[in-house]
Image (tube, rainbow, N blue to C red; front, side):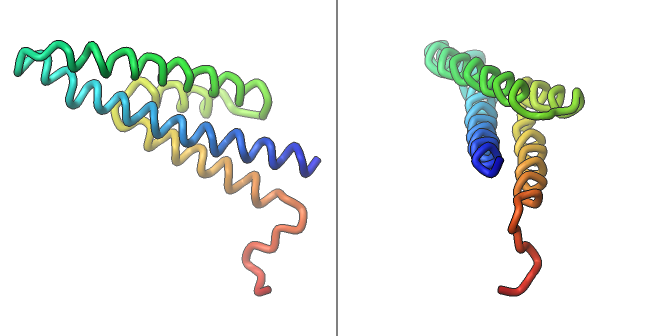
Length: 118
């Protein structure tokens, strides 16, 4: 059982990292590449950043569905993780949600002495 919790923690940490990367590529696309295309006439910015974001987004979705199938998630949490990937700065919400899940999971570990003096 403890081994499964370690695996769950690892998956949640990887998902948190993927959410940050996905959110960063979305901000690069929407905040830099698209304005460069339309304001400066540099469509190659979108041609480079767009496919990178697309691959990162698909990888993130795969990780979300993988995590949801292996752990208990509420419909609201799933919707938040999916919705956070569609909105600029939504990754901040997703990371906050995943940090709460991580802290709950670590608090449930047997032998966790959080709050006690060692």
